[in-house]
Each structure stands twice: as C-alpha cells, then as structure tokens.
Image 1 (cartoon, rainbow, N blue to C red):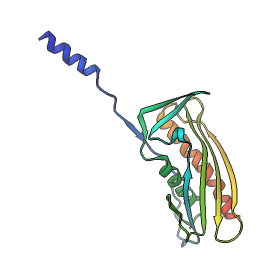
Image 2 (image 1 turned 60 degrees about the horizontal axis):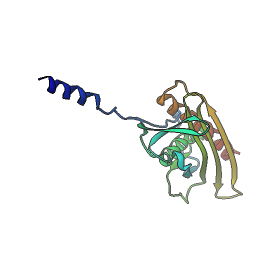
Image 3 (image 1 turned 180 degrees about the vertical axis):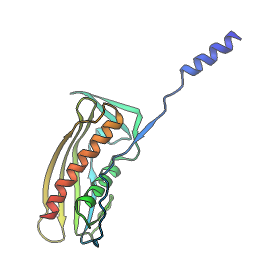
Image 4 (image 1 turned 90 degrees about the vertical axis):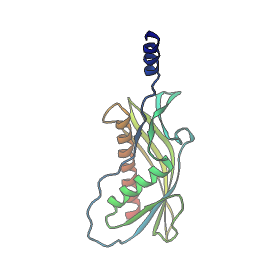
Length: 182
C-alpha cells in the first residue's frame, strides 16, 4: 500500500504544465456606412529568425533569451502580424477594404510590405517593435518608412506582453495609414 501511494505521489509530481496561447489583437473596428473607397493589401512580412517560432521568446538580458514552451502564440507571427496590421489599417483608413496574406493582391490600390527587424518581449521593458515598411500604390513612387515602437506591458506576464505587441502594431498601422492618406 505504501509503495502504491509513493508511486501515485511521484506520478503527480511529474505532471506537465498546461500550455497557454496568446494572440495579437487589433483596435476595435469603427462602424462605417461608407462604401469602400480603396483597397489595401498587407503582406508579405519578414520577421527575425529568433522569434519565428510558436513559443514566445522573452528577453532576459542583452545576450540572453528564454524560449517559453508553455506560453505560445496561437498562430505563426508571419500570419498574425499582417493580420493585426490589416485590421488596424482598416480602422485608420475608414471605408477601406484591407486584406492580408503572404500572396500579394495585384488588384489592390496599395500594397504594404513589412520587414520586422525587432520583435522583442521583456517583462521589464514590454514590447519593442522595429519595422521597415513600403507602401506601393498603383501610381507614383513607393513610400518607405520605419517605425520604432516601445510599449510597456500593462502587466508583467505573458498576456501583458501580447497586449504590448498589439499596441505596438497599432502604432505601426497609424504611421502606414498616414503615408497612404498623403
């Protein structure tokens, strides 16, 4: 009997923690009665290899990161980032039809490509997003820009990190929308 209790106790100690999944959110949409006046396509996006993974990567110091196997992004960042930017652009460019995806939409009035050089997460510093972007319209020269967003996390946990990255992508979309509106 003692042996059975010991085996059950040890088996309970070996239970693996439950995985948690996080998403990048966008600002709530604005109701618009106007018909779509323009179309915009976001994608493709390039992201650093260090964060191109499902587990969250948390910066611990200047030369150290921790890969969080039990705290994961719900979708690949190469899909989540353009999706969130597209949703935020739709909000900023009221009345625009905005899509996202890896394949470019040649019929779109504007195409947005993103090259994310930093997508860093830290419990002490929040989210850091640095991205070069290009808006290519059907006419005129492409417009290039660079966004650096540092957003503190509302809480020092994984959900706070996801929220900080979501707000950083809102800032990125505002800057891109301003370039499109010019």
